[in-house]
Length: 317
Image 1 (cartoon, rainbow, N blue to C red):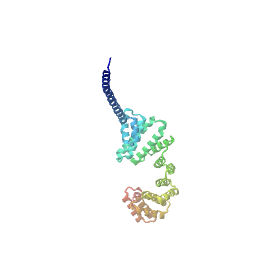
Image 2 (spheres, rainbow, N blue to C red):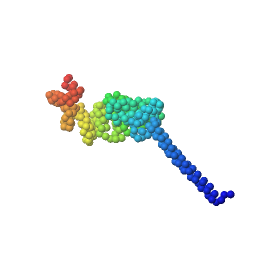
Image 3 (cartoon, rainbow, N blue to C red):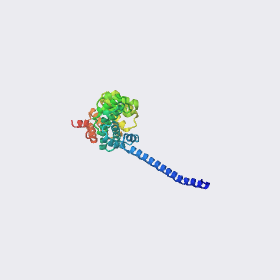
Image 4 (cartoon, rainbow, N blue to C red):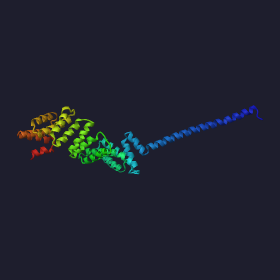
């Protein structure tokens, strides 16, 4: 039979054992929680930084186009024909080409953009076709720009028109089509596209491009209407000089030599090294049977631009 003192000692003994057990359990729980947290962070880090479609999407959202390009390079080795990878790679390569100041690297990126997007088309979902066609059209347009030969204008037109036929629209499509149709010599298609672009944003450069196409077709009254708008309000000196030069050429074609002469003199006051203005003045002197002054103007033209073909023909015919 326990006495009260013995009972207290038993209780105290049990308490003495229970406290360490509770402390050990608590510490174990803390350690386990820390391990779980660190492990989850490690897994999250590995997932985030390991090459994956998710990583591509995150890099694209962050504007890390070089990261997208490099990640896609790793992923392509594992799955060369994966449409999503190729699409992101093509988009990123296009952005890198446009931002690259080294022409060689820019050309490399744009070629890779075109290659990736063309392969992506092979397995593209119907709802993504329009956007890929659009990006391909822009890529070929940029390739024209860096090559300066405009050999790819037909492909620009092809893919941009395909984009629109698949229901994809972007504000720059009409202007890109207008420029490309112009390079292909399809002036009326060019004018139609530029006119559509004017509905998106009116600009003096668009008005000048429309005038140039009308000029090529010999539609001088229509060309002059647009040129008058540009010359009356243009704030860009370069744009103004181009418009005045084209307007003066039209006056020459129409045998309005007085108006042409006034414009050429105004151009030379702003830019005395304009080969077009000197050549035009030579034509006016030629019309007035003053061949000494005419040839003097053509010599000035060739001094500024030795390959100016019309002046070469005049001097060495």
